[in-house]
Image (cartoon, rainbow over all chains, first blue to last red; front, side, top):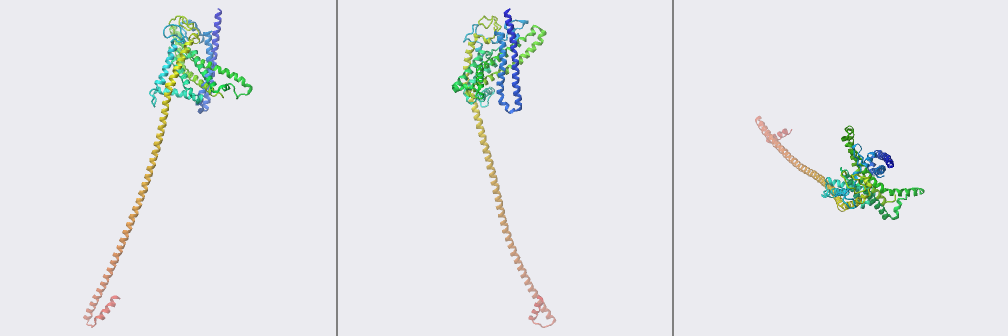
Length: 78
Length: 264
Length: 181
């Protein structure tokens, strides 16, 4: 019975950790949206900044992946 | 998704659906059922060997004709070459070109592992944190050692931001040091996590697909939906497979630039 | 994927062959993955740095060289073509000028010849006219003479017929003055 409570907590925690992925989604959307609005204002400078955009996406997306990883750890490793 | 996956963890056969989202990542010996030792030939070996074969076929056999007007495969090989070379030049600078083969190796390995992992029933080597951690640590160690060899103690000026006001500098230095040491962690987990997440999600949807065999009423809705979802996620994974390889490579270039030019 | 039954060979696989926990975190498999990864990376690195990259770089350089050469050759040919055009134009202009000269010379020749011929003809005409004039005046003079003779003779006869004696000299003088008058 005691173990079940621990497991329940782990699963609830996993579900809560998954909300962090929403934040990553917002972050990635923000990066790309701002890049797009900047690119439409000055299309000639957009090409050189694509790499920067991808780096930004990678950084903000990594945090979402971390929360996903926490969820997986809670479910499978705890 | 969390609850379904949790069911899978206990192999609970609730409603007849079987969820094994993590079973695709199991390492097992190719020959026999013995324990997996360090030198055992496993499915890791198989898929890494296939990666080597694909790279060999693309870059060596593809360009074997050395024709002035390239064929299809040679065009792809030249495209990959030009793509990575330009990235190294643009991001890390001209003096990073001696490290181009190293970066090309990383990129080709990751991109082919990712795409081979998308074949149904295959094993994705890059979804294992052990693999990506080695890749990331290799980059981290290379960059750190290179920085100290090239600049000596001057490499530490990377952490001492002279543009900031003096009282802030120690705090910034602390933050910079922490972020420097977090780099290999985020570098490796980003790649492995992306690969693992996509494959696990596909597997979860795949587990929903045979619903029609259990209950015709619910299955009529769930089965087509899950098949459409698998297709959509698969398409997304094709994109992710390339973008993650690209991101890993470009971050390697960024770190390399820090080692070659530590003064901001 | 792992539905067949296994013996329990690892702490990370349960007795139905399913994964226990996350396979990514299983310590039993790390060594194997890392070993094969290092082998793979070294193999790929040698394939790339020894075979693939120099070859592709050579092909790209060769193509770049060919393109540059071809462009240079094209530039050369273009220069040659424009040179040839210039020479052609020059030759054309020369030929035109020469033709112009020849025409002018010929015109001058013809004019000179024509002038000469005209002058000669004029002179001839003038000479002939003078000769004609002379002949006419001769004829006129001889005609006058004849008229005088005829008048003298006629006057002598008339005088003789009328019966008047007159010498030839007087008659001749009288006729002379009459004819002249």
